[in-house]
Every structure is written in structure tokens, then in C-alpha cells.
Image 1 (cartoon, rainbow, N blue to C red):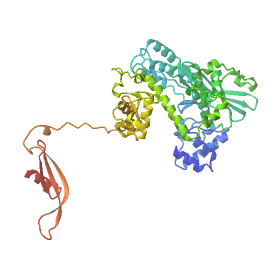
Image 2 (cartoon, helix red, strand yellow):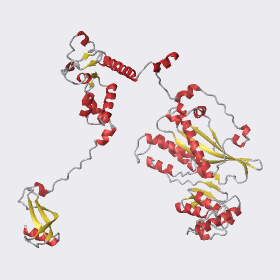
Image 3 (cartoon, helix red, strand yellow):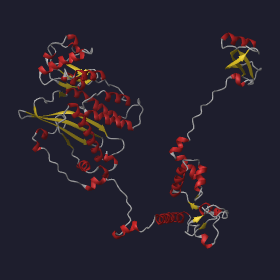
Image 4 (spheres, rainbow, N blue to C red):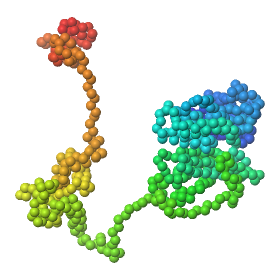
Amino acid sequence: MRTLHQLSDDERMHYPKACRAIKEDFYVDDVLTGGDTIKEAQTLQQDLIKVLQKRGFKLRKWAANHDSLLESIPVSDREANLPLSINKEDHIKTLGLRWHLARDCFFFKVTLEEISGTVFTKRQLLSEVAKLFDPMGWLQPCIVVGKIMMQQLWLQHRTWDEPITEELDAKWRKFRSQLPVLQEITIPRWLHCSDTVNIQVHGFCDASEAAYAAVIYVRIEERDGSTTVQLITSKSKVAPLKVQSIPRLELCSAALLCDLMSTTLEAHGWKDVIPYYWTDSMIVLQWLQSPAAKWKVFIANRWWNGPDWLKEHQDKWPKSRFICNKAVTNLEVRQKAACFTTIKAEEKENLTQQFSSFTKLSDELRQTQTALIRMIQREAFADDISLPNTNKPLAKTSSLIRLTPFLDSDQILRVGGRIQQSAANFDTKHPILLPRGHMANLVIKHYHHQMLHGPAQLVHSTIRTKYWIIDGLTAVKQFGRKCTHCFRMNGKPSQQLMGILPQERVRPGKPFARIGIDYAGPITIKWSNGRGTKTTQAYIVVFVCQSTKAVHLELASDLTAKTYIIFIHTD
């Protein structure tokens, strides 16, 4: 395809229409194109042949819906050796569809195997559903029935070759017996778009509990005043296994219609055609007209000729009777929770101006933090916090009994201990007691990042300079295991299992009866002492006893096989 596109770019100045057909009307190695008149089609045909022959491409298997387009084509280059005169029964297969040449329409061929005595399985059902090839979506009302049956079969968790249930077997046989009727369907190839006054594209979408679909029609207003409506394409999908409400499925069908409409307009080159979208769901219309942020994430994301009124003048089309039922529409409204603090209007300015310095503001923040810690301690240590004031001992079962806690001037519970005489600051000598919980996790997170994701002991000892978290070391280790950065940095490579030792390594024997040999070097040596002695390269031969691990060394002048054999025989 890249070669064809490059050829189109190179020759578009000389053959503009042929190059457009090469770029837009080729599907792999097949080209389907045409013209509004016989003369235009003949010119396009000859231009295509010329352009493609420049790069060595020869067009073959020609087929057309008019005899004159094949007169200049050799019989050997026609599809299935078609005769010069097109028979009323002549047809070809193109892109998986049957094209009737004389009537210029598409139709389908359904081939089914005999099923007498056959027991259907999931494998067979899937195979037969896949045979219903429908690239244009003209058979979607039929094919979606087969898809729904496949979904029902999937929910039964049967194996590929296990017989299906009797109920589903009966449904499938009835559905299968009706498939040959599809051969009676014909779809005109020509959309009557050449000599028109107005072209409109209308899309319809709908949904049920089992599936949802979208279909697109083209509405052509001829110059003689007549109106033609014709099916272009459609698409369907089965409803997801997770149960969804009908309004949600209606919204899925609307989204499917938007995607299908965009693809259709681009494929036909209808850049100036205004599309019309139709749905009978008032809830979907309400959702689409409201801001996306208002809704939950899910929301923020008649067949051949259409209805009879589509052929009428636009004044006779259905008028939208838009009535908003808030009770139903608001089912998908994003719920928001809010916490409000009321401040009198005259106090708003005083709130920021009541501090004369940053130091006083910092004191206010410290007092807020103190109040928060006091509240958490009152909830976690309710049974212990009142005893220090009454000089009563803590219960023997208390988790704080070994910490000798006391209340400071701010009524904060702190650790007692025996280092009051040290030179450390007050927070280090008497850290604030904190229970395990969200507040403790916030403290651990702060110091964990402050210590640059250091080891648990370092983070824990740093926390102890101000806070004493109950079972703090365990809490710090748990936080470290959940930290993504630490997990990546502390990852250990997997260790491969060592192979089983050979027989020679595990059974006793005489020294050097079984050996392993290796070489070391090269090294530089002198063969004799004195002046003028030349140096040469040599290698150390290492003999390792497999049984005792004893080592014997020899000196080799080179790495040749001859030298190696000498050492083997010597030893």
C-alpha cells in the first residue's frame, strides 16, 4: 500500500482522478471504483492502467456492470473469463460480497452443511457465526441474534467440544434453518448521488437489554422532485455481561452511532454533508445536553429504507417532544460530598488580618495540630488518659504501662522515661504518643520522604525524636513495603537454581582419576636467566580433581591440541 500511495503522489498532477482512485479505492490488491457516466468510467479505466503500468503493476480480473467497459480488456484479464456480453445470472465475488453484474446489486450466498444427527458444540456455533461475513453491516439484525446466543453459551462455561443445552440447541436449529432466506436479499450498489439536489445522511440508534445498534441511511433528493432513501451501513454489539441499565445501553448506542457516522462520512468523502442523529431516548438527549462533569464516568464517556417519514419533506419529520424527567435523568448524576464552615460576611476580611506576624500565624497552626493530636489521643487512650491526673496507676493490661505516660501543659499524652536529665530537647526526651491509624501513617509518610526513603530503622529513630507511635517499627516497615519507589529500588534479582552435580563430583575416587582442565594466561616468561634472554608467552594449565578439589598446575607453551595431549599423557 505504501508503494501505491507513493505512485499516486508522483502522478497526481498528470492523472488526478486515477491517482485519487489509487489512494482511496484500493483495498489490499483490489480496486473498486467507477464514474457517473460510461465515458468518465472508460477514461478512469485507461488512466488507471497507464499509471499502474509505469511501476510494473498489471490490473487483472476486470469486471463491470456495462459491456462497453470490458470491450478493450482481453478475455484472459477478465474475472473468471467473463464473456463480452454480461448474462443476467453473471456475478463475481468482491471483498467477500457477491456482485450481480446485470442488476448492479449485492447479494449473499449462504452455504450450510447437513446437520442430521449432529450434536452442536460451542466450537461449531462459533464457526458458523463467523461464516456470516458482513463487512457493510447489512445483515446485523440477523448476525446479532447469533452473537447473543454465543454470549448465552459462554455464560454456561462449557468446553469447546461439549454439547450445548437442549434449549439453546433448539433455538440455534431454528435460527440456522432461517439463514438461507438471506440469499433473497439484494442491496443496490448505486446510491443515486450523481445528479442530485440535496444529500442528507441520517443515523438511528437504539438499545435493548440484549444488544444495541446503530444504522445509517442516505436520503437523496433528485432533480425531478423524487426522494430516495437507502441503507448504507449498520453496526451492532451485544450488551456487556455486567448488567447495565437501559439508559446506559441507549447511550452506548448513541456513541456507536457517532463513530459509525464519522467513518461513513469520511469513506464517502461527504465533507459538506450535514449528518442527522436520531434517538427515541429522552434521557440520552438530556445527558448529551448537560455538561460532562455533571455525570458519572460512564456518561462522561425499520430496516432497508428507514422510516416512511424520511422520504417526506423536512416539515413532516417528527418534532422533538423533549420532556425532562429529573427523577430518571438524575440517576447518573455524580454525587458530591461537601463540608462547610459558616463565617459571617463581616468576619471574612478579619480572618486573614487578625495576625500581625507570621510567627503568630505559626503559633495558630501549632495550636491546631495540638488540638488534633489531643482529640485522637482522647479517642484511642480513653481508659488511660485520665489516670495521670489522679495519680492512679495504669491498668496492668494497658498497652502504655511500660511507657510511664504523663500529660503535659497542653494536655497531650507523652512518654515518661528516665532521660529527663539529658541535654536533648523536650520532644526528644518525651515524644508524643500516637496510636496506629491514619494520623500515624501521615507522620510516617512525612519522615519516610524526609529521610529519602531510607531504611526502616533510620525512619523510625527519626520519628522518635518527636512522636512515639505504638508498635511504630512494624508500622514503618509496612509503609515501606507499600512504597512504590522503595519496591523498585529494593528489588532483588531472581536466583537461578543450580544444576544437579555430575556423578564424578559426588562419588569418592583416587585423586586426579577424574579431572577438569582449564587454562590461565597468557603470561610472559623467560626460559633461562642472564642477559639477552628472550621472553615468550606461555599459559598455565590448571588440573582440578573432581573428587577432592585438589589443584595441579603445569606450564604450556601454546594452546594447540598437540601440547594438550602431551599433558594428558604425562599426568
